[in-house]
Length: 212
Ligand SMILES: Nc1ncnc2c1ncn2[C@@H]1O[C@H](COP(=O)(O)OP(=O)(O)OP(=O)(O)O)[C@@H](O)[C@H]1O
Ligand SMILES: [Mg+2]
Image (cartoon, rainbow, N blue to C red; front, side, top):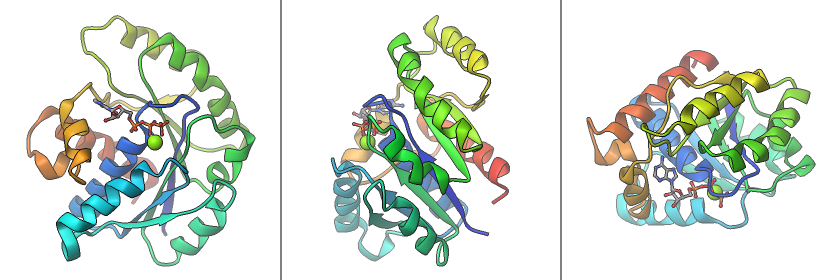
């Protein structure tokens, strides 16, 4: 049974696009799942990454890519489910009720947050939306500085919101930035680097949650 993961967060720059691309690469390359990225963000950064990737890898690019409007996400994802094991939907920042179709179709909603109070405030409405739709939610702490006290505060916030937290925390890693610019991802540039290990560990958590 094919599955849909939607990555959503009101706050801009929380890592949605980076996480979408990196997870797609792991599921496609390491788990051999046919994977399509569905970009609903008119900013088009995932599309630019994908075009760079296609130019570089040509027929070796195993990830598929589609775009849709936020409203069209559900229809497009339903169609894609027929021919894919996994669809990962990247969404724009500042979504509200207009994000509902992308949430409704999801088997799992991943909400990345930076450990910062501003991100905590911005996260409540998307959590409420996903909860209303009775979706499985995974809050993912991203761009964490392991020495920062703010990680503890992020964990307290997540517990207070009564939602599941990913055991994996993604650190602030240069590999996520540099690999994206080349149309690649952490696992394609590293074997044992921290960013690579973190994204692998996250994918294992997701795999067991979704039973894929
Ligand atoms: N774990 C990380 N470590 C270091 N840099 C990161 C990490 N995650 C994301 N970034 C960087 O943070 C910036 C924002 O990331 P990204 O574009 O993925 O966020 P976004 O949530 O998709 O943004 P938007 O809301 O504008 O769509 C990018 O420069 C990206 O390279
Ligand atoms: Mg983005």
